[in-house]
Amino acid sequence: MLSLIPRDRRFFDLFEEAAGLLVRVSQAYVDLLRDYPQRERYIAIIRQIEHEGDEVTHRTLQKLDTTFITPFDREDIYSLMKLMDDVIDEVDAASKRLVLYQIQAPTSSLIKLVDILSRATQCVAAAVGELRHYNKRPAGLRMHLIEIHAMENAGDDVNHAAAAELYATSTNAIEAMKWKEIYDLTERAIDRCEDVANTIDAIILKNS
Image (cartoon, one colour):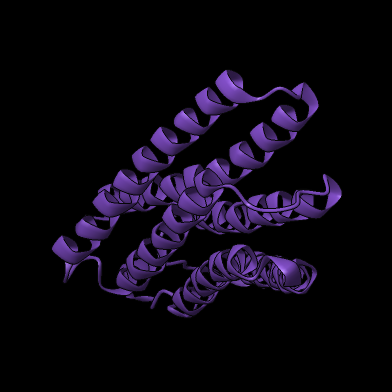
């Protein structure tokens, strides 16, 4: 009898809304670095998106508490939303440190990392958009997941190279520590994108 009860498809609207915020927050981070004299403006935009992400997560968890039949396991829905929110939190933390640490200009390494993050969030949004149809169009979804893993590997490479350069060339240990933290927070945002991909992969395996 339970199999005849339709699963609430409105969760997918919430997933896609959250994924859209990832694209917006990474684009704001890109814009911040491109228009660095106006960084306070973009940090405020990122902060607003962080609030919107918390609100979407809250609405999803409320819905989870009141829905009898969900599209897939409740713990997977929770993980998916939490990890997408974590991406936004990492960007928020990294961008605020640019002002907190009085960073005068972005480095080429940070620009590369943020460009990778932007591409990763676009892949996440594309993958989340395919979740509605994961039984009908598995190949397209798999392609996006593979791209996210590739972006995570690229982010690791850039972060490691940036750290090596810091240790080899920096004459100011405090400044090096500041930059290392900003690089690591940005790279962690990319890592969380891969965690989203892994969660989606687990959902597909469980429900195929």
